[in-house]
Image (cartoon, rainbow, N blue to C red; front, side):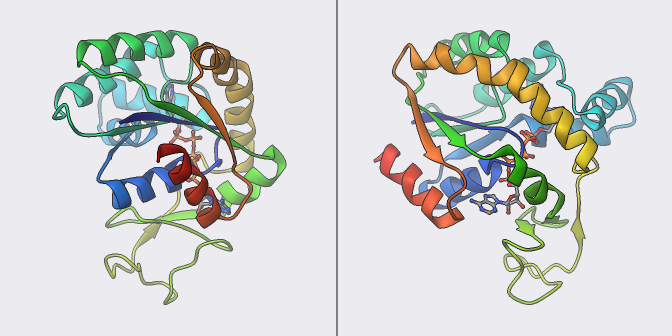
Length: 214
Ligand code: AP5
């Protein structure tokens, strides 16, 4: 099964993708995670990617589609894929069609997480992750069971993203409205889109997604 999780910054794409990985053994392909790896490198590309991400803009279609191409080619055909944060433009949507066809795959569902943007700033600015295993948390909505200790791996190191400040978040939302939301009709025309209430609590969102996937 191949699915796209679509929604603005903070809609819960990464949270729900992680849950599907744990429950269904699917693989999460997050272009945001891939770009965060790329920006760590002390190279021209790393610096270029970091500048774009910190401004809240979109990295070039060629760069992100090449990343997805490489990841998909390395996966066994029977492994289900969750596309998290990709595609984000019309050009990327067309590239994804080509890449899926090249790998003998097809798209089963596009799940749109429907959210109230005003609430998202609070979600994003409260977010942090385990520095060791990457498990996601939130200052209010998802705290570790023992304060300062990761539930999953026991690490006591946590980190926050440099682009999770209010100004950058507002730019990221504007990019979503201008460039990503307009690709929905492309998938609606193929009857692939199902909307899920992304403002419900995390377990309810997971249950709604599970019901769609069957
Ligand atoms: P990316 O990393 O993809 O960020 P994003 O799309 O802005 O999405 P987020 O990761 O911020 O949010 P999310 O929807 O995953 O929410 P989460 O589950 O974490 O991209 C970052 C940047 O990389 C982009 O700005 C761009 O520059 C670049 N980039 C990436 N892909 C690109 C592409 N394809 N093309 C070009 N450029 C690209 O949840 C957020 C918080 O809310 C968490 O703390 C969570 O615990 C909490 N939460 C989640 N669900 C709920 C709920 N139901 N109730 C309460 N709290 C919740």
